[in-house]
Length: 413
Ligand SMILES: Cc1cc2nc3c(=O)[nH]c(=O)nc-3n(C[C@H](O)[C@H](O)[C@H](O)COP(=O)(O)OP(=O)(O)OC[C@H]3O[C@@H](n4cnc5c(N)ncnc54)[C@H](O)[C@@H]3O)c2cc1C
Image (cartoon, rainbow, N blue to C red; front, side, top):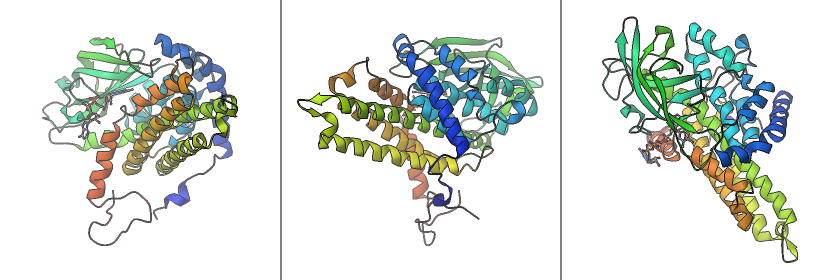
């Protein structure tokens, strides 16, 4: 029986989730917040955040218990990401890479050798992981990628140049999307896991960015890198697009994590603006007492709470730690959270006036950080393409209000 979203949306945290939220909030406020501006100003990797997250065992949240993790799902991942992003997206993204990046793909899709080799170090916070999909000439149109495997005895050789790899300069391993031998575009895309200490791997550079400056993106060159059979996560072949479909579906974890980080960062900016308005006076009147500004707070909250409910629906529909959030609901939630966060952070700057525009106050950093999240993990436009194209084909979100009869009616996903 299909459940309706109203049955599944948890409007409040359970006791366990509340405990996890409190833990993440404590680490965020005590350990991440004091250094957040520094990582941004100096474009410095947040090593102290990494140590604090590791000490609190937060990296273990989503990894299976067999490998030393807590075995929790997308909902718990989102709770942690929201709380950390309230103070610092550059630090939260370290957890995003573990929760919703390669370790989750390895656990769901990988072979036993791969799991045994990597998942313990992921849960223990001993290794960072990154994802290499984008190339200089292939971003949204991932099927145009040039990354390619050639056969080499029982294994392969990888030649690729990946661009915009978050944390790539500090990661131990990279999940590289690439085309398998003898396949022509657009088919044949699968993925391999590459130990970044391997011969032939070079960190070619890092990007200088507007936001999320503590955890930047790297360019990574792979030149004739040996790939063992057990390093293959998803195999593909000529005329085969099933591997790509599996990888794209699995990106829904990352998209939900991206949405959670947006919601957290915007929540931080909103709460900062509210407390600022209570203190700041325009003549004799506190900003908080001006109805025109109260309406801004109301609109910001309406947008943010709406996107949080959409995210909760996508997360709940994953159905637990072994499931994956569905594509349509994920695309809606990511686009909504990206747009809500950009709007909320922009308005928070406005509410602080000139101080909002100053780097001495945290709201402009939140704005710059969420701006990048609107591009990463599939742009807002690409989410809209997915939603619009599916609606036009008669598919709809899981919501009983949609008609299921007649021409153009819903079909199963
Ligand atoms: C902060 C950040 C972190 C990132 N982390 C990673 C990472 O870890 N690993 C990784 O592989 N990549 C990463 N990326 C790269 C990101 O996935 C790409 O930037 C994104 O997919 C867009 O690709 P592009 O930059 O090549 O833009 P393009 O694809 O060239 O798009 C340019 C513009 O055109 C729009 N557009 C493109 N095609 C269409 C279409 N069909 N319909 C409508 N509009 C369209 C896009 O939305 C965009 O606005 C990251 C990017 C950012 C900003």
